[in-house]
Image (cartoon, one colour):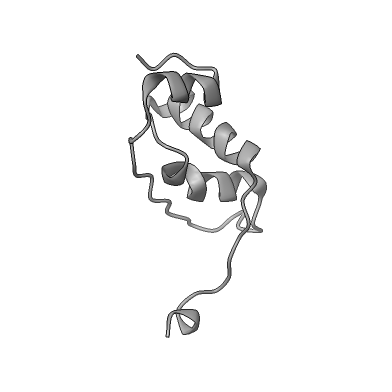
Length: 77
């Protein structure tokens, strides 16, 4: 049933997730866990959506400060 409702899937690399987490923090002051940044990471990898209206849900802040800093290099404490 679900597959009739989606247009496609994207495989997201770990480094893209870290880049998305870092970008969300640097540009929007959002601290997010890796899972919460996956949709943003997929967009950063390029999905052929240029010129289209796209909405991304960013959720999840279940990451401690030390882990966030280790992944992103940003101090969110």
